[in-house]
Image 1 (cartoon, one colour):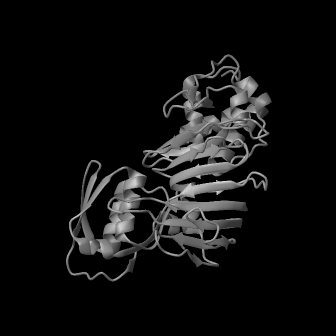
Image 2: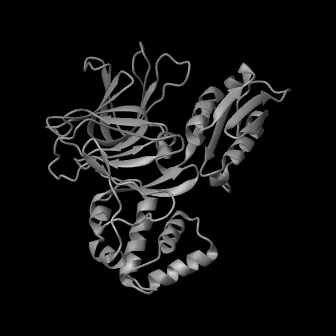
Image 3: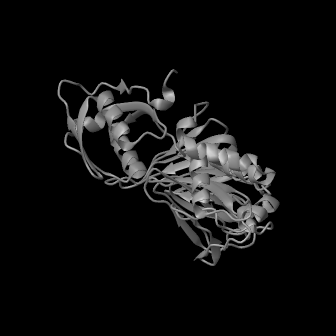
Length: 371
């Protein structure tokens, strides 16, 4: 097998190896392939690094290695998003067929779509000076996450069923985005160009930090609840767009904003449940089943119906880390003593009888085994 020209099947095998979906035979073949050449080992190492870390490391430089591996390959076509290049790699086949320059410049992200591992790169602008960005909208489907690198070097892990919009003139005098859904922001702080997020009637302003924002408007809700959790640095949260009603959050602080209410803040709490989505984990902590239903629909792309309103008042505490939908439903059924029926992408929950609405903890999911 030549290091200069590999069959398409070999690229597919690399994808399966990195995502953990390769068979034992494929793993052995991939390891032998990498062991035969130092440049191959560099490429494989960078692919594994992209899988493990949602944040983008701009220092990656694999031009020399990829030049050998990709020699003779044709560059894939580019889709255009408001004048800025978006490089999308299909979920099946030819997924590494991109030039070395694109590999270096693009934001590497592992995206889970319908349980299949896909590596995508989204590059909005590669200007180091933060050139002006036209208004752009980036969305994820049910069960999909994306990592987006903005021109200023800030990164956004966009959660499932979410939309991020950059405002006209992003990167000029200010950096302003709008969010519907959930996202983890890692922001490069610049005093002269503040980074602001408009979400659900709330304004969140970066003071140099990493923070998560959540604001889903579930069906039947007149407005969404906005939650902001800070992992490092600090942010200012304003109700509406006025600085008169605002609070400053420090690490491990969580702010909750509801329409017409003052901003409430919980300080010194575990923010893991608010950021776990970025690594593909779904964490419920004493969550009302009415909230769980919304998450199931967003993460698994299903339609959920509950026949007994009393079930919606039951509470769930559990962590899911890559479990199949059937396994998640089984755990929920045992935890809440409910029955369910699944037909394709439609799920119906029914009362099992003999249980009050007392809150119960779910059996440990796979990630919690042995804890």
